[in-house]
Length: 365
Image (cartoon, rainbow, N blue to C red):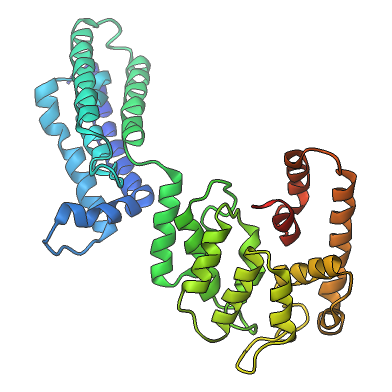
């Protein structure tokens, strides 16, 4: 076997391994939720259990194995071998392009155009590779060209598939919510500013259902709600009031709904003078565990009403002291910005106080 043949063989073996590993990891680690969403559409009335690991292994093997067919049709070898995987890359992308509008992610016209361009590229590269004979014995150049070609081919599934990060977060949140892994729901996209109504509702339910330790059930609603962007506060409020929560979880949901509606008087009244059947009152939490945003709301109501609520200093002295200091700093900075445009004041205060109830109350519609 000549040096050139050995080098070409090494490149082709490398490509098989890389394309298989990429396909498997791409499907199993990144596109599992898209595949789960599309599974009923592709299987129809046939009952096939969705098994992401097995499905990823099988499909990765199929698209990689198709190289044997495409090499016979396309005839690329050596440094150009990566082009034999282009049809398989398109198939991989099409399998993970599913969205709510198109089962294949794009219109048929878009797919026809993409396939036509791909065919033109393959024909052009076939002609080019057949006449490009210089430096075939140059091992380094052969591997360099191959890696460049293979990299471009591997990018293709990412470009045509459903890569919408918000959609992926929504699907992952729904999956963890179904499994009762509420902490994972709350961790998804925790630092992302872009959220959707579905992701917001999933987070809200996770807060209500997550273990609150020694605190009343549902207390994480008051502890975490305003840590996340809330572009749909009215929708979340309605969901909290309409959802069939029970016992203390239901009461925490109603208290949080009042905060979202900026009904501070009703909120404080519900805590200070609960009904006879209520499971939650102003002193239902231990010192140090009073939900953060409940405390901030009470301090804000005190400021508006011009009087101090009695239970805070008595039941939650340490928390109250800390939050009063922070509230004082917030009010001082807000006063210094008086006269500036609303958007400027909102952005300036958001840097430090964007995850407080006070900022939400003053600037969130």
